[in-house]
Image (cartoon, rainbow, N blue to C red; front, side, top):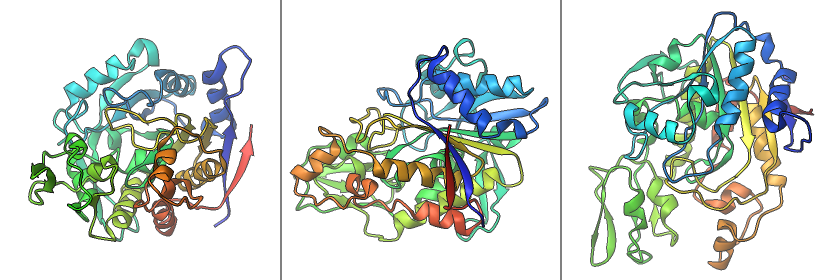
Length: 372
């Protein structure tokens, strides 16, 4: 397979319109107009941010993309699916409320917000997975699959289970209904090393299923209740919580790639990553830690694998910032490997999504980076 083209631009600008105008220039250079948008419903999949988190993408980015879609004759809408864990996005009403609080309104974005899997996260459709090895079908939010055209607009950052979150995570995990998210997460469930547990209760605050209780100031995970989401692993600063299934993160990554394949296969798709506020954890948390690297820029491609690979490579080369989680890890005695995503979360398997995505034909890791 020949290399895919990934278009990139930094955040430097001194022209009217600023960064939103530069994003529009980028996606036009990347060839978005090659898609026939005329009268087509266009899903722009993004993350509206959890309450308390400030690293999610501003509505201005959504507006820039939606305006280009309308200019090309399309009918854009912003979308995301409900979460598996409790929070501000666990049902469509709460999800829409937090989206509005974060500025995602028709007057600011130029289009409507539709929650992809309905009121309770149950409005999904079973979609075949082309070349699927772990999932023969995927449960995807119905509104997302009803769209004629799919655009991923992702905040590129770290992630406590998958190493980083970019286009593939935005699509694969983000477009799964609640049942679809369960299917992707069920490979392994975490356990507690009591010798390392400090009883700080941070893991219980992050638990997506109220599965963690305490006895003698030590955490205990009820395996019959646990959904296997892994948020407690990322929340523990003392490495007391781990996944005994060594293949769990690998399987999560592979399933996520297969879910992304289900969403994208057989219809026009386009993908955008914004590399800024690169926090170590997902925007699904009710907080965001300090960035681990400086803001880098924006990238776009028709190939989500090449796009994520290029963005990961750019992040790997970036200067590490002090007063971040990386600093904390060094102070705790961790030896940095130089692989950014492993240095943030050692248990993550950062490249398995890319490897498996390429294997099943979602895209190629080989890319040509064109700076515009």
